[in-house]
Length: 128
Image 1: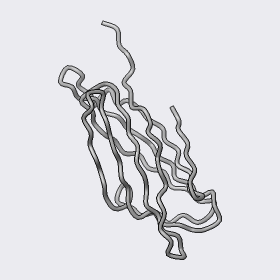
Image 2: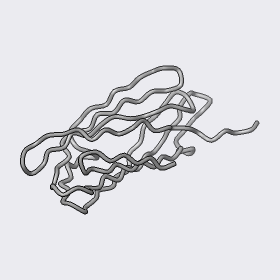
Image 3: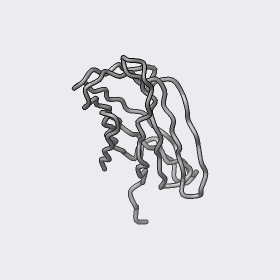
């Protein structure tokens, strides 16, 4: 499932995947991978400074994750450039949502947030 959001010339695409080999449903462990593609579709270069995620499971448990950059990097995106990375999260339920924002700064020193709309994390239904 692909979600797309564009703010201030920054486009964020999200693709999710349930990681069955890392999950253990009997022990409430559901692992998801997500691949993010950040593209500068605007006209001003910008550098990604920080990330802020809010992750919710189906029981209402909320995890908040904040930090510098993404996967140890702070990509600087010129117009037309993109950066892709894959990361993961673990939930205690087979379904949840994740969303948040990136803080970026333009080469002119102007900071702005690129919101990431909530996207669904969902394990496929299995029949017993």
